[in-house]
Image (cartoon, rainbow, N blue to C red; front, top):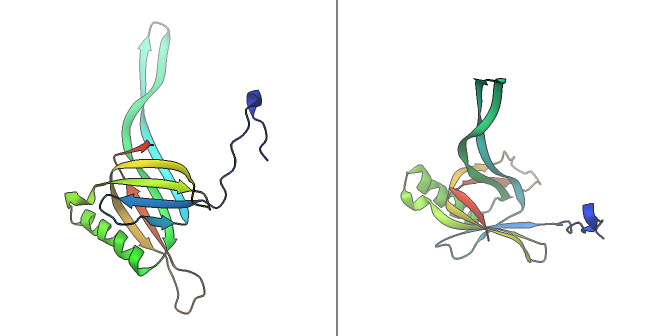
Length: 154
């Protein structure tokens, strides 16, 4: 049940147990992730001050934009690791083929799309495997940081 927001507009339903999928051009299937660590898009600001007839004026202006990034996590498996590491390795070698058009989708538990985005010139900037211990009962996780030139909602 949703509660009404301002102006009587109903609140959107809460997304329960989402799934996250990244698919790159040339991949036969997408990679599923169980956790979205972050999705960041940032524009720095520059402070600007000057004297005018009315006194000192302080403003903030748009600065340099940083490339958007997405941090995703999934259970460590050989096929998923090989696919992500191959993509990351291209970036480590400064290979222009590392920058690929990719899609980022958020799906409900039943597989219905909630959000679909195009990641322009995406590449795997960082790949981490979390600390794990032999004979541990916990699932080992890997984390991928994907950077792109832009995110376009489809």
